[in-house]
Image (cartoon, rainbow, N blue to C red; front, top):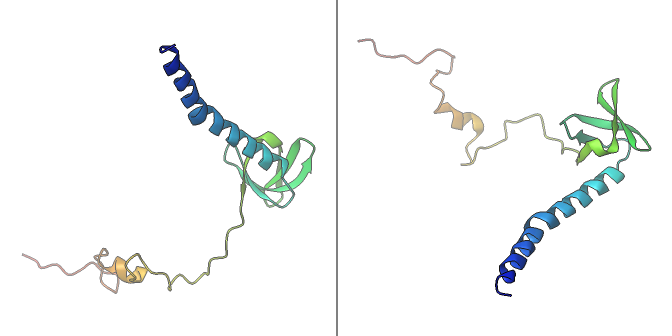
Length: 124
């Protein structure tokens, strides 16, 4: 009986660390594949990103470039990509980690003068 206890514990550890998380991940992926709708931005298992044009049974038509469509099976879709928030074009207001603007923090690492020439070096 004492020799059987470590074996049972080993099976329980494998179940909770390997099998159960994999089942959850498979269920989540299946839910994503069943909820595909036209207009969603998705990524396939091979990394191709496109917008769903049509869902036809077990197949999905993706627009990967303007006017270019590819047909995939639903199982090939692994992720729905959320819409990206709009980022302002003016990046001058961004600051580095110390609260210094990006242009100022880069100045100490850039050996060029303001006019773009190399710094003056003393000639020996």
